[in-house]
Amino acid sequence: MTQDKTILVIGTYDTKSDELDYLTKAIQGQGGKVLTMDVSVLGDPAMPTDISKHQVAEAANSSIDEAIDSGDENTAMQIMARGSSALCQMLHKAGRIDGMIAMGGSMGTDLALDCARALPLGVPKYIISTIAFSTLIPAERLATDTQMILWAGGLYGLNSVCKASLSQAAGAVLGAARAVEMPTQKKPMVGMTSLGSSCLKYMKVLKPALEERGFEVAIFHATGMGGMAFENLAREGAFACVMDFAPQEMGNHMMGSSVNSGPNRLRGAAASKTPAIIAPGCVDLVDFPGWQPFPDQFSDRSFHAHNRLLASATLNAEERRQVAREIGARALESKAPVHVISPKQGVEEWDKPGEPAHEPQSHAAFVEELSKFVQPPVGFTELDCHINDAQFCETALAIFDEWLAQGIVVRKAN
Image 1 (cartoon, rainbow, N blue to C red):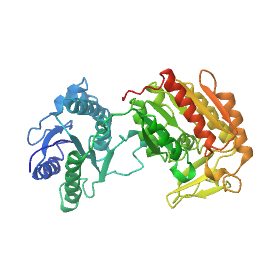
Image 2 (cartoon, rainbow, N blue to C red):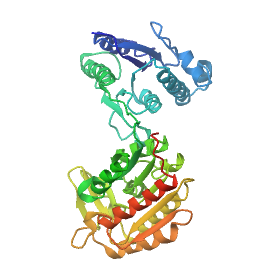
Image 3 (cartoon, one colour):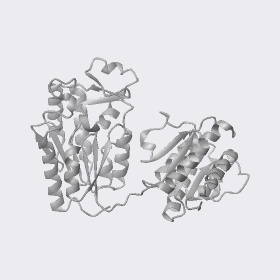
């Protein structure tokens, strides 16, 4: 087996040298190459690493002495996080690594999340963590394609239980580096959001129509993590245009739901000056984990259980007005063209007459407020239709085609 891929192994080699050595040998035993990076502060590794802790601190324009003198472990590890993430980016750009793997407890995971975010989509990023899948990790800290495994029994010392996690992780990151099909960027891409295809149906019309125009279309499931991935890529300028038609994760965040994408939903395209068409798909709802009790403030609302994992309650008129005002404010933040489409007859399948979320007076309050707070230079179109009607898709495509003719949407791949 040829040593065809190089994996960067990141960890605190002063306290976890046995575990990191086991991980390194597991990768090498499968034919992979390894580059080691020490991110410890106080102690020294038993054996030298390829990248020392001093090099890591220097990459953060600091030093190990400065980290120690801070007298605070959080401050010290943030220095190491800045340096290690900068080195990750540099090593990948130089073609020296094909993937990264890091291990740690809460502090090591904190650092590893920054390292993963320093690498582009398609570069394998694996984190072995004692807090994997934990609510301690906010969605906005996760890179688009981060992989995690729980480091069972790995808090202190090597044992047969944690070897199961380490060996799986070694095979996973090397296998991913060998198997990954990197984004080709041969066509310009439109980023679109939706909440499934039964609740919101426009993607079935818009995807083939946009592909006929020479664009690739990536559709993100707006259930928290999907919106986070969408925003990360939009912020990086990965899209020629965004069609953000399911921004309810922003409303979820405003209402205190854990099903959110962090505080910066609807801001990624603005940051990269990417043109955006926005519509309020599903903003009448607040989503919660279906296995948890609803908060008391929503206990009297109309309710829809999508499955055992995800359930939704309706927002009242005042809450919808709050969401409308925030959509207007965030649309105005962009320096690129933005156009908001407002369907007056409803914004998701369950709010149609006879369905559990049909509350026309509350939706009318949203429509009224949105019309007040979407201000020039943001474009605004109010439609007397439902978001799942053909007129909505026709309007979105008409705006897109106009921008294409004007050179606002560019056919060149990013």
